[in-house]
Image 1 (cartoon, rainbow over the protein chains, first blue to last red):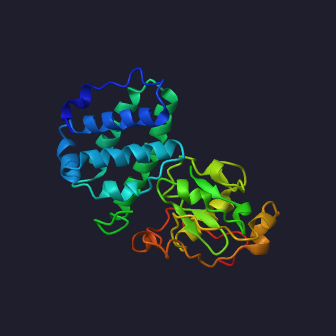
Image 2: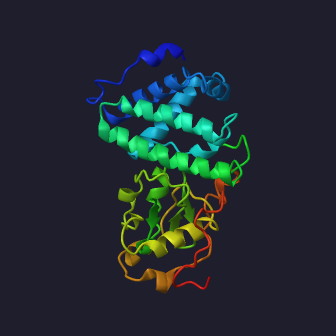
Image 3: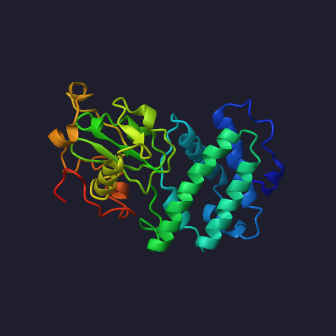
Length: 142
Length: 140
């Protein structure tokens, strides 16, 4: 994926169907992650060349959290705990970028829904970090 | 906040909810399902999927005991993410009052143990944050 996609703004997307709006949001979020000086290495190292597949999974995940119908399921807590260097500071920055992306959404209802879910996942990751790490063995996909 | 499975799931266990959950936070007992409160991300997509209308936000009045029951058994029962056929007599028990006292079974269900996801999530993944509280009506 071209990191130059950060210029891809979200304004004007409210007339699109939900999956398309969520897809644009997800693409924008990951583009911002990849342009963040502290998160770029972490995410590029974790995805390692499978950006198309990762974005497809993340679009499916976030769409499914808003409306049933897609087939995605997984464990976002474990996925984030496996990131190199994940700690409370890195998590806070990760969530800040997510919130910043939400702020760009013209659909406030969708933005609020995404924020609620991200905050909940963030709480769970914080708890897991305090509790002592990953909930399953590294490399095991759910 | 989290969502909780309540009384009318008992002996109905339609399992439509497990198919739509994006984070696979349902756990299966012999005759009901529960939600792991520390894995639920409050998306609520499961709520309208339940034919028995047994899934509700835990913010409602009088749901503390159901939250405790969900937390307790989610740490014991196996994970379930693939729907199977509901009990043949599910419709007969749909709407019967006070099923917890009459029919609740603390025994685990089979979960996803019979399919390909067994090794990955056939058991509880972490102790719940709010585990350890006694469940009203239970000897624990």
